[in-house]
Image (tube, rainbow, N blue to C red; front, side, top):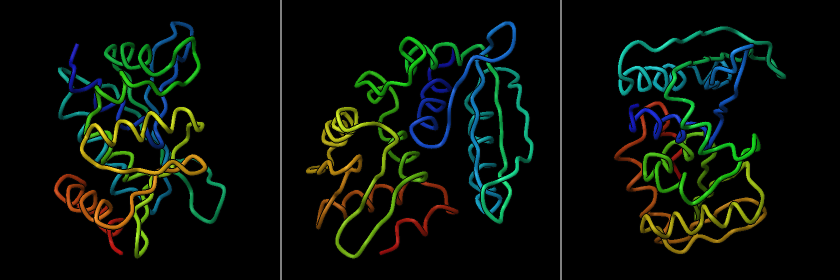
Length: 186
């Protein structure tokens, strides 16, 4: 089992990715769906998954009808290593964000979450979350452990203000792909 592959898969699940057990054999599949306008980042994610995976990675790409003007592009990836990611993220088949998962993904997970949900304003940087408020508090504690203090939890969002937002943006510039750099502009 590749620990770096599991960590990357979990990172992508912090934002738009999901892992589900499919088919008669209940094989784990990582699915990421994005609008056609975000195809560059979707291809980047698929390349990174191939890069850290040991051996051959089964991947399927297709087009799904979107809710708006643009269609959605979807990639689905299968690997036996995804069983471990599923066990960590889905406790009793319910998606749960735990401190253990956040410790595994580290700063790479924060960067992936930013690429999916991060926005900036003149005075703050905001990360939106799919989790409820108690789990969002796990995100705030995790950000503090990574050195980004203080993060305020408001309605399922993390807000970094002032110099703390500047520090976060500066560190994210070092690791996120070029196609997501516009999300860091103020």
